[in-house]
Image 1 (tube, helix red, strand yellow):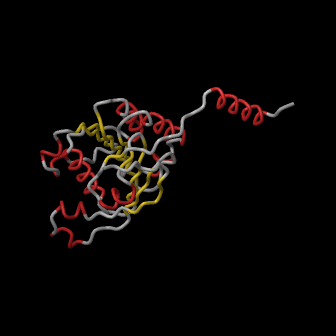
Image 2 (tube, helix red, strand yellow):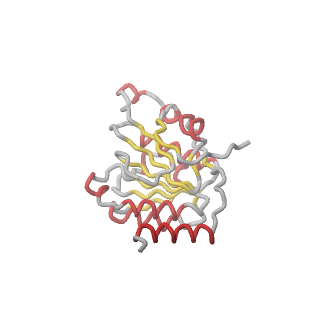
Length: 214
């Protein structure tokens, strides 16, 4: 008698034969204006989850968000920010960069649900889930299946989903970068646009090939 794993394998085989999947085309991407992301990975892939891991204090996550807002503002792409710790300070950004932003304030417990709903909004081109200030316990309580469900939700869309975390958390991330170097105090004397474009997030994972653009 066939075992349960054998029955499951046979069922998967029959489903694959009946419903074959077409080869996945190279992904399109949202350009960020950051050489470390655009030149290395082609940008933020559309229909996929990108994780930005911020492992050090003052490592540039705020500057990264500002750069994403500037890049999307230039193309009039609508953005949603899911702020899981109510830490976003709109007064620290130029007013013009906020004109295309939807700011969703919530808790870590409701952040994934809010993000899932936003991925279904065809008017958005970028959704950012900010979990930088979530505790280790709150992040551990999120089951892996929730992250994979979020990846499946975003796959048929034309938006990029970015999750900002304090350590590698998202198992379904198709792209992962890390920011792991704190800025020196001398950075306070520099102009923010120059600091933003000089950010050098390091590529840690890339599971999808980005289609070349003209």
